[in-house]
Image (cartoon, rainbow, N blue to C red; front, side, top):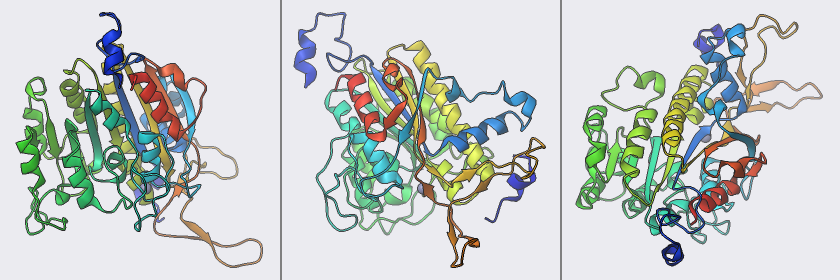
Length: 422
Ligand SMILES: [Zn+2]
């Protein structure tokens, strides 16, 4: 971003039924009522409507005359709407219940992954919920998870793990090792090597035991890569299972990643390779792709990083839409788990609204100090998630289910389940 405010950074069961269907109708998809063979769900973590607007303004070079004709790839999708994001115990959700809602169709409490709302966060397990990924695996589809965060972080974890505490990432990694997800790409090596070891990037383990999970994955037929060059050398046509973990913790922000592609592939590159591997399964696949650090940049009040990660996420959306245009039994859904930052796109000139240059601020994470009427607003270090609705877009087979526009995040699960006939 080139405006001063951007660059300066503000301080601020179905198999039996399927057999009964005459060949040539539905025998190549998972369930008798399936409309789609493949579902790709792309989640921009922390990506609310203002984040999309700002990314579009940036793509237009912050030039008002170019802005009218500028679109993100996700702007061109067939159906659009908005999603309510509240969790079982809060108007403002964190990623754990939001992703659980999309993965399972059930609301749960903040901090809880893959369990129902009887879970007491960090204290007591609830009932395990069945995820769309588990249903897909059971029906013989291939599955994949891609993120720019640790693969054990809340959003991807909600598709395979069941824990009362999203921070229990050793346990979450163990559950991933048992999940049979065919393509796993992201960060988080620190939870995959034993506690006295260093991970392949040279950083210390954060596990609480001696387990070495890459060896475990390798014994189950996974190729394991931990840098961008090795990833590029993977022949997707000959690879059935792939574990790619490229950082000890989260992947780099896109702005930093671009200068060292030998270390990490882009989100779009990971998405493309995953689709090539997964689409070899004639029964179809489920793939979740997360642009996970849009959220982190929002918490940090860093506009440049937030915009670059949103645009990198949009490139991943483009690869999914390109795949769907050649494979017309594919459903692509793009949404977010929640907004992050309370991003306000206010004009630089607060009186005349002129100049064409906006002066965005993160309004969340502010608190009122005691006072009579016109309270002074104090800004905290970190911006927060907010309760606002988030966008949803869909294209391809079954996309019309999004056509009424107004959804609850639990309905994302229902739409995907119905599309795959699971
Ligand atoms: Zn967050």
